[in-house]
Length: 97
Image (cartoon, rainbow, N blue to C red; front, side, top):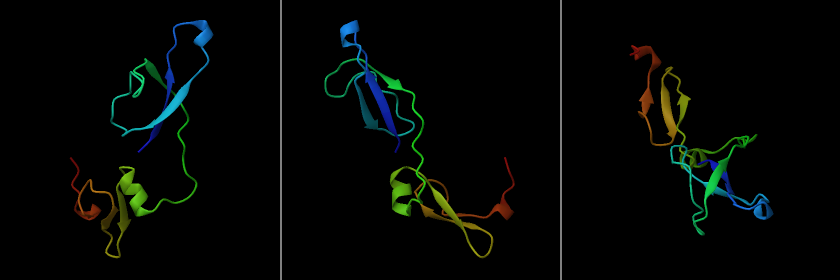
């Protein structure tokens, strides 16, 4: 699951110092409009995504909402992580559409 940065929207210049917080949300979840604890208005801050340089294990991929397929010796692909999609995919049988 991605981590998003939010900024609390302040009305006065004296309170204009950026106060931010992070929230882990699903990629398809709607952006927050209010702080989850205080109810203050917030806006999502555009940030560069944090891409890990190390390989993630199957459990980490699954918990982040990804699906991983691995090519087998017969040329088909088998799902190794995640729950979305078919268990096996054979590209030789794909007809498009």
